Image (cartoon, rainbow, N blue to C red; front, side, top):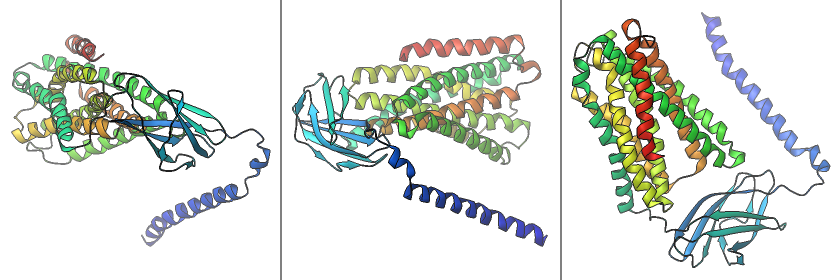
Length: 394
């Protein structure tokens, strides 16, 4: 017993010692870097333009050093003319950010071409296709984004939850149809999320590795939902922790997965409106609202075979878990949008949806197996329904 305790105590010491050696090795390499003498080529200077804010007569843009070498901001060209500007830090080391601000009489709807000239004479250009006023981060805008998230995510999901009484009255084969329908819905969401996430990863500063952030988010979501499934399975959920409560556990897992996906939808709407694409933002709101009504059905489908009815508090909780993240996403998209954060969030959404699909599929056996006629039809129906409603936000 004493030996076992000593072994457990020695593990963190060994890990700490290895980390110390690695840190020391990296530090020594940085101090005595022999490769410096081999570099005769000019420095590699790169800037990533992460966020542009237009106010009355002013422009503010956040830049990040996306290359291995230091970048010194020397001059600024706007639409081929030099302009006076202020910058929070002219000398940017690797991954460091700075905010450039200037007074400029930009015009609504017209393009703005900004070019940063570095101290070595390299020109790095950023193009805004159509300048438009960025919404102020005040209480009114904050509430507006929250209401949009409520309309996109919470209300449609709650409407979908009303299908629960119908699911209580159907036979097992038809319950299998609706569970398979849920898988079809989620598989489509997964594909959609992966595509959008990888697009955002491509827009992320190269040094931040957008694809890596996407993958990290996906793995975090999978491990988090696996823990959540185990945690919920060990708790008494109003019904006993038997086969009857399995449906409720799955419902919460689906709600969590859909909630992370809706976080991305809110992000899309918030960033579209913040970028001045109000017409697109309005179209996305309507489309996502219709799109998300089917998600409520997906959440309650696993509970159709339970003996009792979960309390109303569970339905309220399911609606909040699935819908409320849309509000958070709208706030982030409207006030703090950056491709790197977006790639991470869409990774979380993709991983969550994939884990939920696995959990539902592994629970479908016998008459509800995906190899049976009605479940197969349900799966295909889910794909078609999501494709049809997805056309509204394409």
